[in-house]
Image 1 (cartoon, one colour):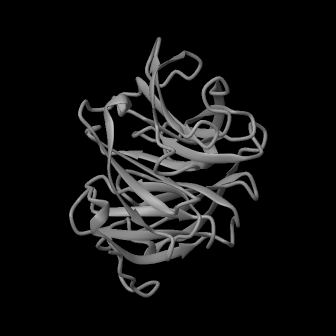
Image 2 (cartoon, one colour):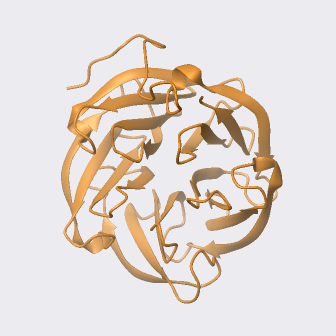
Length: 272
């Protein structure tokens, strides 16, 4: 069961990042409209030198190279991949840490698709479908996707049921082995859930709330167990975008990135 705390009543980061109480907009943004006018989910390469955007309007995953890691002002478009044959409404993208496997979900197929690289890691133009899994029984409009760092758990959310769903993978990183385990409702504090992100140790979860133009912060009493989630607070991004679709963090939690398709931009925040 979820219990609520007042907005700003504490946080999960201990003063060194990850705490939305400390979040401030950096005044840095990056326009995505040249590639897609309905940008959705986002994913950063762990070293911050690349980012990937799900283009909902063009049915493509776009890659951008950052010449200065984690600095949006240095981003340049560099390749794309069409998902139209599998998913014509891509809403979220995620990568295995080695960059050799890509995962995409969306409301067109209600599936999570797994693509394997046919060449080099992180190389967008060369991907082949390996397998997929249907998630529509839990969420008819999947919009967010995340994996535990060891690939043994997958998390999905969607704006129709406003729940975060947890799956166990018997073979790490192979979505065909994913089995639904449990879920938790976030609708009371994060209505119209459009994206999710977890702190690397699994003790905090962040939910994009399109319905409240905010990022909701949740503490997990048991790491990676969504049933142990407790609502902490939310951070409004309405001053930047009123139709937000995705969130990502720098690995140390000191930077947060939010994507929105009211302005078709990606925004950068400091959280420490």
